[in-house]
Length: 126
Image (cartoon, rainbow, N blue to C red; front, side, top):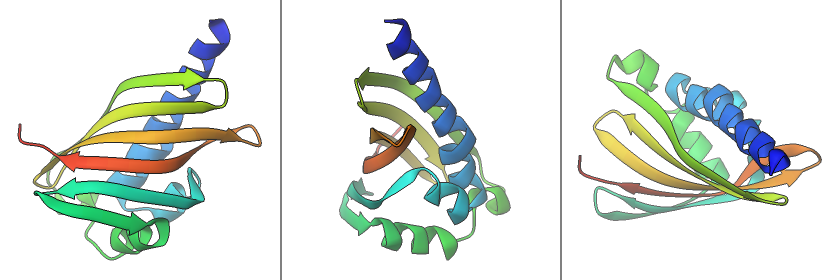
């Protein structure tokens, strides 16, 4: 049980220190540190299907105005983290621009590091 809590804390730290920070600042190098190169992203945004490779997603981040530079509110929040051995799922909420994203992030511990291997998002009304 103690090990599981330690791993949940480690994933929460990855989310706070890299994921939310990278999205907020639009820093693709920071984001690359926590994504497995084969990551796929799926979901819906404003009711439209969303499907991207990691490279497509990072290109989008690189070519948009960052939330930091936009001056609009940004908030990233870890809702839950569930760990089983070397896999985990984190549920997070991200408010940025005019979006409220509910996200499921799948993690795998590879070479001692927790990496995002899949991202599913849905833009919800709030």
